[in-house]
Length: 466
Image (cartoon, rainbow, N blue to C red; front, side):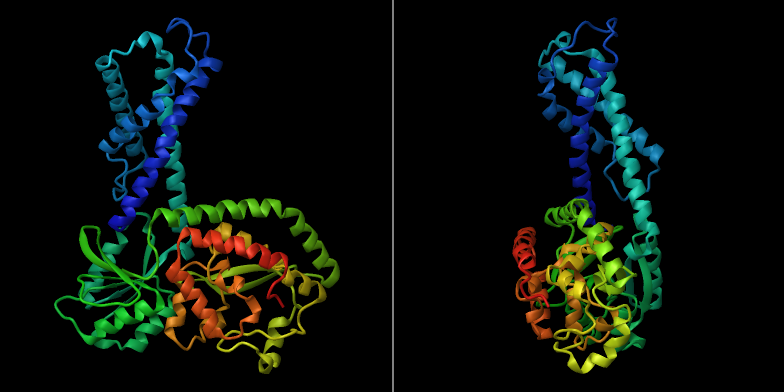
């Protein structure tokens, strides 16, 4: 894991644990008042909860300091769950010791506080932290099992250098990096490199320059920059026009990272959070519509109700996209007969008044109701709410300019600048690509909010739909 990633996720875990330390106080108070109120041999009555609100500042501050002291936020350590519990318990004990030391220094009357509450607080905190860690490890194990969620890595260097980095990558916590190939530039030309990037849907290139700096190295940087593929090298030898560079460290090795999209950051975290929350809420709210449309499709044109197609996702990773079927069942077989009527330039296929579209399908398309099942794709993590539309594999395979593949350097989405700028009224593929790349280059969290709000009237009034 890159140092920058580790620092970001460490901060995120600290924010979550701050909330858990506060929640533990409230849960302990409820247990003390409502479950064990008869424990009078420990103390008499208990003060109202308002008397403990100042602990909302003290406990998270002391807790995070002591837990960090025990090293539970060092994500690069492959500790067991038992080791985590022991470290967390030590941190809690140190936190309670520091808390009682503050009582002594500031001469806080402990008689005014519930000793039973603090006896309950330590195990409650340990339980909540343990639950958080168990869920985190479960989530990481699930990601490891899902092959499509792994980052595909291409190694460039001599055979010895590639083997060394292969062993190093295998030590990555969570096993999220998967080496798909190794290339020696002395025996490989640039077209072969480009083919490897496409064939294996490469997310990341690691290039060891050694002691040489050749034109091929510059070409590799240029190719990765054009396609939006992140590349790690060992020194800042190159000038780029799109990708930004930053020094980082990976398992003790200094690397120079070139990337054309945003990396681990709070805005990106908020974007992913918004995706999952709005997709979940959207599926719940649209459930009656989903049922009604499913029944309408079944009784008007039979099964299948859903249209499934392999689309190009992040860095070209194939995934199955779901839509309500709006065409006749053999629509894909009929496409070759209609190729001469294609109204779009480039590799994309769209025609005016497509005869394959059913009457109900025309209505669903006009108001984008056929797209509703893609909320499940968002919830699965294959798509985002906002991002370039995912294209079928056969269309992305026909890209003639490698720079067009940079639109796949971010997750595909339900809507983007193309949707709010005319949708099907745009017939130039170059203009479509320009809007997608403009979104990538301009991206910030508020741009997503703006696009979502502008998508609503475009969908409600069927603007640009055909």
